[in-house]
Length: 406
Image (cartoon, rainbow, N blue to C red):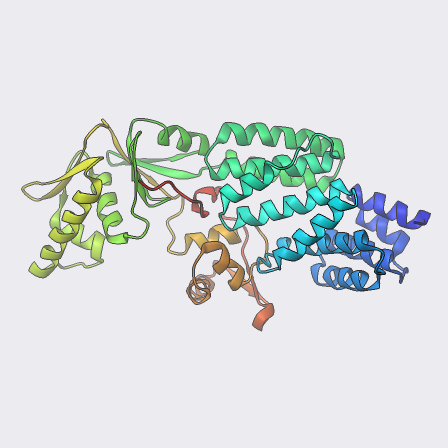
């Protein structure tokens, strides 16, 4: 490899894309195309970067398998940044195997990190954790160690392990400062903001206040009976009942939790559960049926009893009932949570990440666009959606994660 290519590669590794382009901007060979592609990706021109990397992969000869594999890894990173979650994961895995077989441990590890970050985006946290456990960051350069710790912090945040996340981010900050890459240091700083901004609202005894993630973690570990409107579950210290697929029952549970230790009038429960302002006898009959179902579901945790004017919730073991609500109440909060990362998303990628249909996501995007909360770029299959982050709030509790179900 000639000196210009070597110097350009070192500039890219140090986060200096302009310095790399000064050396390879006029090169029309395969290494030049590859380095220009990576430089354009660092500068934000992802479309040109992808085209240059594909051109480089075609230009490398059959004996240059490692170089082609590196191009595939770089293209996979561009796909991840542009939220193309449908990009073929098998191609990345094949590239990683090639790099490992030829002794390129650093780039092979980078491919692993890309795989973990994609799994984390779509909520497959257990699989992401198992994949990450195969990597030991100790022998890698500082930039790779920072990337490793950012992924560790991301998994810990999804699991609400704030101490683990804070420790991982502190290690990432030290590694990023050692690497002296401004973009990496900015990414670590942005991750720290999640720990220091309100994550939820606590509603108890008619009052509410905002909570940080550390306070949310402490609340869920306490002896309180929690109606969790972020995950749509009801829990105490020992048990958890998911109502994510039973919205009427959860609406009733939340109404009863917000009113505790008092009761809720029957007409108010009809309004919360069925969205009706006026209730007749048929609605009250349906309410009794749904409350019977809620009573059966919550029997290990609490009792739902009738009062003179309505119904009340009585926990079996806990002495306090609280409601944990989202920081911003929004019908399409899940869509906004993903868009709040500042990247541009396609509706198909959002559907994959949210585990729902593309048509459902598109309806939500249209509604948010009409309200001026999101904006679209491009047309047809190239259309992307984005929005600036919601100021002052973290979206960790809005993102998908698997929950233990009793």
